[in-house]
Length: 301
Image (cartoon, rainbow, N blue to C red):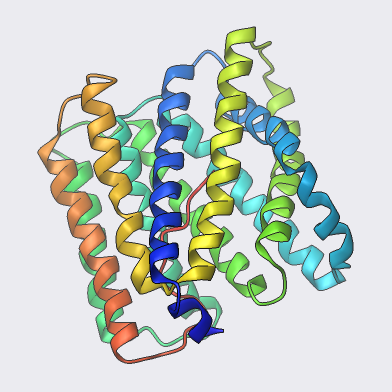
């Protein structure tokens, strides 16, 4: 399997570039959507509308004959992702795109910690140092005491924890189900999980808002699938640096489309986090360790 992946690095890079563009497109559309629709409802409609694009993938799911254990894993992942995605939608409409993107990279750091706590993996010194550096990067972005840390920033800190839990669960299932089953089961479980939250404070969307959410669903669903193709085509060490270009696209989008300006501290903090994660990945590749949970910044929505 590893040999097959390593033989297509260019394919993996191209798929990851496309993935980054798609996910940045998601952030742009959500930003345009605004705050009139509550975050859980917006997330629910995104996933509900996204089911339309997953109809061709239903057959592989029906053929998969999932076991009781697999159903439990997918259910747990759905719950974790439901919370994470709701918080992400909340943060996206309240803080700059660059802040959201940079703080989202904390998820792989939480993955490293979670792998040590729950999967019995050794937290080597290099990972401890990288985790510490990434957390320093988060503090640089937040700058508590020097600026107000709003609800949007707090939401992203918590969302990254739940996204990490979702990713750890997905990695447990990676060798058992293909990307079609993984993506489809995530969408189905999150749609069901978000439904009661959405109905608690329902606001009828306008036609324009529905079109925007349909665009979010399309971009995010395709993004999840292209990311799976990238990870299947090439090793994490090859695809991960390309995934970090999302921060560049997010900064440019915020400046030229939404007029958010460039916050140098967000750039510095994001760079520190990216460097820490890249270091962890590079060291694992050099030492040729086969980990159950490779460090990869899986998004998202």
